[in-house]
Image 1 (tube, rainbow, N blue to C red):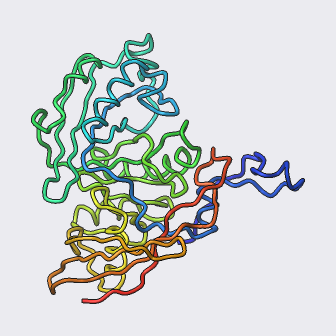
Image 2 (image 1 turned 90 degrees about the vertical axis):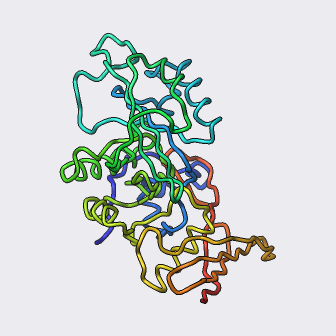
Length: 327
């Protein structure tokens, strides 16, 4: 399917003042598609997650900015991250007039505060739900997975964080609307996942499977494959519980051998080597039904690019190239 393009806002391109020229400004996800930035091995780290349902509007940093209670948000995020977990705000898609502007706000006070503990580690995949009547009680929820009700229902979280990045807003909302038609109970909007240039992005829990450019594909089909225990490689960014070298090695193994099962090509070990000339080399050993697969990779930095719509200084990102792959 051909890649879609967002309308230009007419904003100036960084560097315009120095060159005297005004190249067309494009959203970061459009630029990424033009460059054909690789999706593989770009999934951010997340072994365990703590999700908080907040029905109100989200600030730029979700739980850390107004209209959420800033003091509460800072304490909550610190507590979650100190436990080695990732915080995420979630809400049902669609516009609801009863949504609040702040905890205890005047416009339709949120009556319950649902939370979810998610474990994405291989062999430990879990979703547990709970709720509190007061948002400050979220600070007392155990973060070890010992509370809440276990659920066998997956959770599909689509980034639609408008104030963080316009691509997440426009592309993400397209994805979440389509996905909610097919899976209304499983589908949620979520705050920033990382990888704005790959919008629309989503993560499928409990396994923590990241996908990008989903608005160019079929979100419902990707979800269906997940329920069938498989990944859709064309849009797959990687699994949150795995390192980037392992994500890259699994990508190349799937391309070579074609096994798209989620649990295929389990990592055995990984090792870094100095590749010289600013490059790093990695050797990753994977296991499948036929034995051990050894994957040698080169890690290099991309040309400078603007990775978000708000970025003003180009930066470099890691990219992966296959050297050898053998059983």
